Image (cartoon, rainbow, N blue to C red; front, side):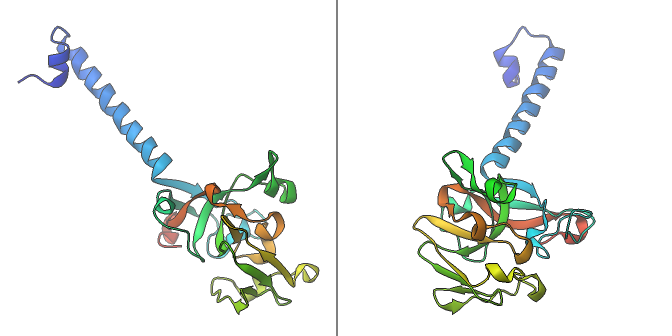
Length: 209
């Protein structure tokens, strides 16, 4: 029985059919990898200290703790099937207004960020004088935030925000070194890319975030 290429190109020399078969196989594999990367799972590198110590960035960048930056995988499908949950670490595109990246305008960098979801649509968020977060009058339990990493800028403490419908409020775990929704506002649902679910690099850091 002839192979598919043999049936399609009966007069093609065997060597050419073998070469064409390899080309098609490799192209198909590349297409599958790109499709998975675009729609299912995508890798990301942690470039700053805003999520320390949950997610490391690499020295000698300021306030980074590790020799290598963590690499993480994000599930790009999950929010097509359910709403985001408070406390999840999420990859998202920073919000824009009138074509201006609000994060870049406020902090000097924007684009794609990785931070923790703190406020859901309709929430009232308050950061008290000690840097603790309150959601709708209830103190948020945050074991992932080290005490000394809470907000150090006393003048910017004791603030409140309301999260509009269809928007989400993000903060970094390293509160005093995180440029987040406290500076540039909430993020539209459409800007959410995916949930971080696995650290795959460096080897000693492999596991759940």
